[in-house]
Length: 223
Image (cartoon, rainbow, N blue to C red):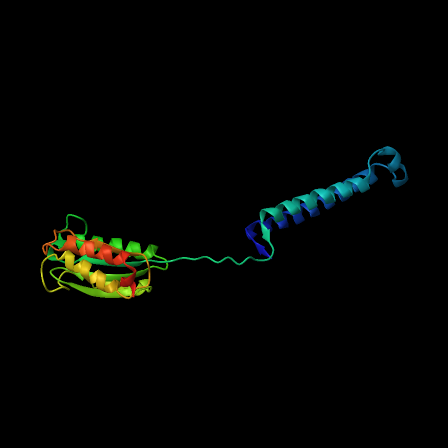
């Protein structure tokens, strides 16, 4: 048997304490009556008062109180199997590591703030694979698709200005890198998250985004 809220079962001790108190009270009342008159005279003095009915009423009251406590604890018998299907998605997070990301207009700076947001996202994922790409004038895979979010967080710490030697902001190249990561993925749903503060100096972001959309909708690109 399982309990939905077992903490309520502690109240059964109160029911037991109440039973002890009621028994003591009944004994005290009986002793008080016996001190008032001789036992042979008591039935005539307490006409209509039945000790048996009192005991039955007290027992029923305590039983109802105990059952109420058990009901609050929500007992459950048996079990039921339920198949839950969850299909995760593949996510590529591309982080701009160009020098402009050191600007402190967003505290502590743009790159650190972006990494904090990615950390928050990793803490919310369940069953979704994630990959990290860093880019500036070119792009590199920092972490391949993985379900190991702790490992992804470790790689994320390595994202810093200068990790990509070529300066610039090639957003199109970062999207192309994401497309290459998605190749071979059997998951139907994919997403690319770009974190950047600059314009696409390579001038290919629009074309790369269109190619990514076409390939994500083409089933032949998943093999």
